[in-house]
Image 1 (tube, rainbow, N blue to C red):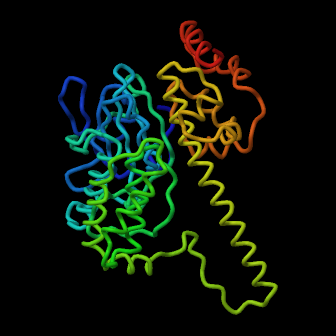
Image 2 (cartoon, rainbow, N blue to C red; image 1 turned 90 degrees about the vertical axis):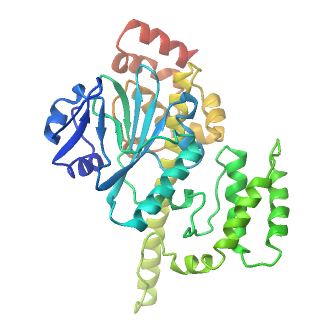
Length: 382
């Protein structure tokens, strides 16, 4: 691997030595610099140690579940490592701050997040969450890297059930799963009426209304029961959570300014907020499009605006507005590590070129042999 992303470097620098696993099963504890010089010698490395959790690691054995993290709205994994021979993968979310195993509360919070993510995306529930595929070994794995590390708080909204769960009651977009959509919408409604005497009756009525919005209704009984139990157990926590909510931009309160200065400050803050919102939307769309393009290529389905929109569950116009992003992801399918954030910002605005116009450049820069070229030519141009 010729270079390292900033967030990955920050995590690896925590180790003077790291436990490495050979393909034949034996392991060594060696200096980090040795791994960087000889990544091809090892197939797994241990990111989570006996004293700290440095990452959230998911083991995905079913190819159909590779993009399930995107469907449920989880943040984009920092590292996605796919075995070139069997399509089994590991998803890794690096943590900004390692979680000490001496802190019982932090460990419980961490494990609640890990167990919830396993359930949401269908990951291996028995996986021990310590070692992961050696994402530096490009001979064995195809790795995609997103230059972002996370805090545990970024996953708070995905905890399925936790006695100290707090939420800001924000609206959710559709995840593509009827059960998850019903659960998310119902629980958020439940938090607002948690102290009402007829809580169960109101939850049942709201579930019935939400269920009618689906083309094929589901059986909501177990979901209602889960939300009801959680709301009853935590009905005194939600008000406190609302009071503690802070502004995302963390602006200070405006004081002692003239009318003109006040207007300028407000305009400045609105511009920053609008820019941040636009970047978040672009990154979110980029993650969804990337996951869809990879899925279409694995299944050898023709890459068109219509197919991307259909499989990503996005509006056709939105996909066309992100044409450059589709182009960049398609060009990087050869396994090079790439940052979704960099690609999204690099793409900028919309592109009017049809998808087939990229084929020549794509072939020359990313495909290794004539067989690859014919295969992807069929996929892209039909």
